[in-house]
Amino acid sequence: MSTAIGNTALAYARVWHLVDARGQVLGRLGTQIAQTLMGKHKPIYDPSSDCGDYVVVINAKHIAVTGRKREQKLYRHHTRFPGGLKEITFERLQEKDSEKIIEKAVSGMLPKNRLRSVRIGRLMIFPEAEHPYVENIIKRYDTKIPLVTQSIE
Image 1 (cartoon, rainbow, N blue to C red):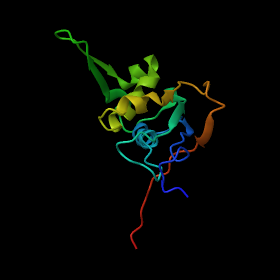
Image 2 (image 1 turned 120 degrees about the horizontal axis):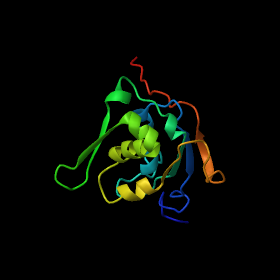
Image 3 (image 1 turned 90 degrees about the horizontal axis):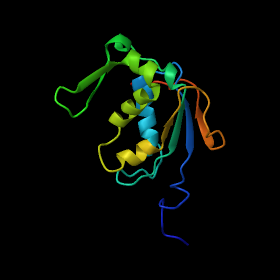
Image 4 (image 1 turned 180 degrees about the vertical axis):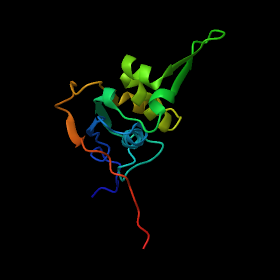
């Protein structure tokens, strides 16, 4: 009889999740993706171990934001040259490279440690519905992510 509890290969098996981003709110979708990449949905979760799953996001071009963020949200980066601060709005970035929007949102929600780049590596984002990982998908999240509400009784 084995005395190892939870740290088996079956417990650490990685599952492929499909997320349809059409009409989803960016922030709420990003938190769910980040939790799946970290493995917080598994009972064996440990912050220092990498036990998360793969996430494939489709229809990234059709992501939604609330309020006036479409016109007002800015993404900034620096070229490392003097005066090299570049800004691009959400609208222009969505037209130019819609995958970067979800990648930046999820990356900002992951812990800033050595596992961050490994976890982001398991995130595959596609602008439309076509993707090459059709055979790998086990779980689908095609419906909108429900809001968690707690009733006080």
